[in-house]
Each structure stands twice: as C-alpha cells, then as structure tokens.
Length: 509
Image (cartoon, rainbow, N blue to C red; front, side):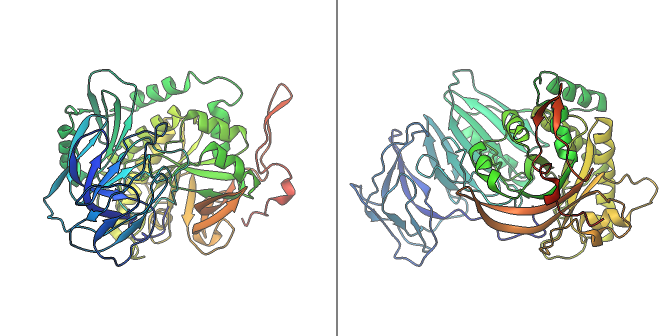
C-alpha cells in the first residue's frame, strides 16, 4: 500500500539474442539477473562455452529441473548501456542493451509453445532467478514456476499492466482460456502449460494477441455475478466445505479484532517465513487477496495458508485493490462498487474467510500528494457506499484504506450526509512513524476502536533470520484484548495479542 506512488519497479534487463535450450530457435529477447545498472561497453560476456553474436543458452527447466548455466561470449549490438550480474543458477554477467524499434517483436519459446511479444518486454527465466518477484505492474514474460520465497516488497501504486506467466503443468486437456474483466486476468491451459496473464484496459488487445500467437484460444469472458442473491450463493457454496477447528467464522473473527502492530506486503509470505516472524512483535499480516490492481502473483495465498496463519494466532488484514479514482478507472461508481464487493466476497470466501470478516478496499491517492477534487470525492463516496452496502448484504464488513487527502478524507467529509454509507473500519495511510490509531484523522471519533493506521512504509525488517520489506500498521479494532478461541473447554487458537495482554499498548481513543 502506498500513500503516494514510488518509481515503477524496473526489472534489470539486457537486450540481445537468446536461444532457449531445447527450442532450437535463436531469437531477440530480454534476459534478467539480479544486480544494478551500470555504464558499460555494450557487449555480452561470461563464463563457459558460447556462440557468436551474444547467444546465451538458457534452460527451460522448472524448479524441479533447473538445468545448466553456461553463458556465451559475443557482441550484443549497440544502444543504451547497462549491466546485470548473474543470479541463482547463472555465472558471469551480461552487459549492454540493443536499441529497439517500438513496433519490434520477438519470439519466446517455452515448453513447446512460441509467443510473439513486444521487443521491449522483459523475459525472466524463473529457474535461473528463482527468487524473482513475479509482478503484474511491469511488462514481462515469466517462464517457470514462481517460487514460494519471492523477494517482493510492498504493494506499490504503479498500475497493473500486461504481464504473462507461463509455467509447467501436467495438463493434457484441450486448450482453454477464461477472461475475468473485473480482475483483468486471463487464465489459460495449453498442453503441459498453465498461463496467467494480466492486462490494463488499454493493452488487453495486445495481451490477447500475444496469447493467441502461442496457441491460446479466444478467452471465454466471465461476466461475474449480476445479482446480490447470485453473489450470496457463490459465498455460501465456497464456505460450505470448510470444517475443523479453524472455521471461516474463526478466520473472520481474526480480521475484526486486533490490538497492536502488524505488517503488509505485496506477496503473502511463505508459511516458513511467517513461522520465522513468530519472533517479531507483529500480531497481524495484511494480504492482497483480489482486485485488478493486485500487483503480485500470490503464489502462497490459498485456503491452507489462511488456515495455517490463523491457527498460529495471526490476525489478518484482507485487502482488495480494484479500479482507482486517481486513474479515472471508476466511471460508474455504484455499479463498480457493487461488482467489486461481489468479487471480493467470492475471492475471500474461496480462501475460507467467512461472513463477518472485514474486507478492505485499497483506494490510492495522487502520487503528487494533491487532495482529491470535489468530483473525485463524490465518486469515492458513491463507490464506497455501494461497496459497503453490498458487502453488508453478503454478510461481510467493509473496510477502506486511504489517506486524508484521498479516500479517507472523502468519507470523513461525507459523515452525516444522506445517501452515504460509511465503511465499518478505516485504515488510515499516514507515514508519521507514530504507533497509534491516528486519532487526528478522525476528530469526530466515528471510527473509534475501528481504526487501523499504516504508520510506516518500505521498511526492511529481520526476524528469525528472515528479512522482508514491508509496510507497518497499528491496529485498534474491537475489544481491548483478544480472547483465545476455545471449543469444549480446549483452546484452539491463542491470538498473538492475547498473552500477555499487558504488552498491548493502551488504545489512544
């Protein structure tokens, strides 16, 4: 989450000639490694045998079959300069980028499928860079299985755009594809491959063309639910199978009560990392569970992850990030607010997050820090009113993330106005470093004991030997001390903020 945008993440790249092992094709491509951009001589070099003209042998192996690593010597051509040092599975380094025509394309072959992509798109071989953060807010093609241990920072305000993940799958079924306009994601299957593609409204046609070039059929468009009763049916069907001590109701409770500090990140940390962070003072974790502007692939986030973290005592901050006022993506606020709520309830319930849970809408602010205009305030108020009303109809509580110059300020300005339904919980973005619930943002006290404060961002923290880049939050939700979850006199879950209660800071309001 951002109080304003930071520079768009740029994957470090070198443009030259790439031969994908096993494909038999030498193609213009973009190759990645970890490292920093430097002035360089415009040539490719490295260890091991290589071919002329900068040919680089890259394995197509999955995580279970990483392949070999030799890099070749030769010229990469002329153009802007840069360098990228080798990453996991690679040796040596690559230097130089070749000039590209804006309309140029390149062929990328993987698992027997060849896609024609724009020449300026990055290509990332996940078997050689397994900790790469698979993000949908950069133009990139990711080849391989995303890791559970990705090096992702916090969610940024950069908009989602065209990106494609092609990973091995055991499928031999006929090719198929589905398009979810509300999520702006196309999912497809091909023989031996599973594909996830994101798109912005402006580049959907380009993404569809790339997929079609690799044999993906025309996607079937999912129009979503059209009525509240249909959306409620989806929620009920999703929640019915869940049994055991960690029920959807228990998970919901762990979103509605929390007192202390927490963190949020773009990608849900692995269970191993969450276990290591059991040594931290944090009691809650924010997860981006849906929305068209969700930047990270969320390889770890599933119902088992939600159950495991709840069982470990973690409170959850479920975040949904869809169309944004500042990007002029909200043109029918009432209809889009309802549609977002329907999708959020469906996504949350599929993860075992039950009715009564607080689901937060992340509505970003202008990167310049400028306040919303009167028109943007009105759009926000209509959207949040519809979002909140529909979530209530589906049995969920409504949360809103924003700052005083943006969405939070818009809703404060609407207090008491006829026709406006306020969210149940306010998550205030104000990086002032104060570990409190930011009472100054709510002078009327409307959200007392229903406030979260994101007080710091872009922080590197290390606990249990694991370092993550996170935003930090203070929670002041519900009762003053979380109670253990019991069944038949047996404690099932001990919330992280229940023992000892004396360590919980005194609420500021």
